[in-house]
Length: 113
Image (tube, rainbow, N blue to C red; front, side, top):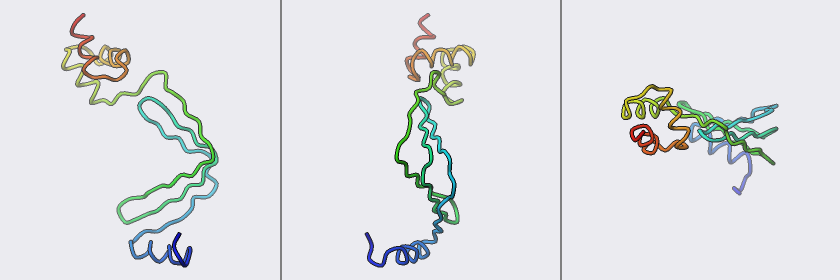
């Protein structure tokens, strides 16, 4: 920890051009990936804001992870599989689901049928 505590930290952040504030009354934070969701209830959230962007710090005592039944694929992945296998986007999405997101395996599944 720094000597001088919060005042010294605020001075350092000011020199770096960062403004730091705690977001009050945050009920829930959800982080979504292509295969799961992480749900954080009643977190402490701090925002550090610069001229170009913001950094959010999330502190939680506990969280819950949920695996998604149907993974989310990017539009680029679906288009790539559809073009390489010469199939529709729906067929490409089904193949990606069956291949658990593995692009090469999805293309092989479609082209070897």
